[in-house]
Structures are given as structure tokens and as C-alpha cells.
Length: 52
Image (cartoon, rainbow, N blue to C red; front, side, top):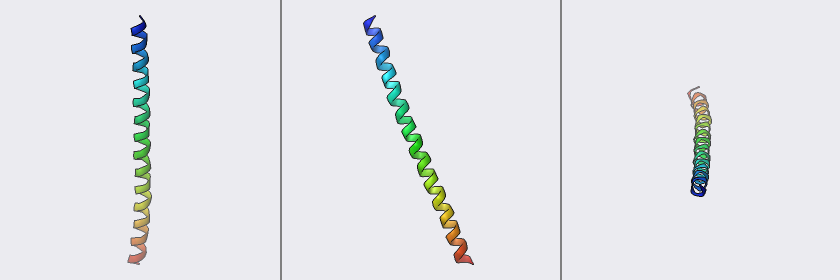
């Protein structure tokens, strides 16, 4: 019985670390996408200014 509780506790902890890692990865990817998006807007603006 005790080992079962211990195992479920370990499982919950592993789940927590996995989900927090996933959230960190998603936020990192989201941030890089946002940075690249604003950079591409900036580049498009600069290229349009040069073409004029």
C-alpha cells in the first residue's frame, strides 16, 4: 500500500515536471515566433522604404 502511494506520488511529480517543461518550451517557441514576426515586419518596412 505504501509503495503504491509512493509510486503515484512519483508519477504526479514526473507529470508536473514534464508539464512545466512543456509550458516552458511552448512559451520559448511563442516568444521566438513573435520576435521573428516583428523582425519580418521591420524588414518589410525597410525594404518598402528602399524601393520608394
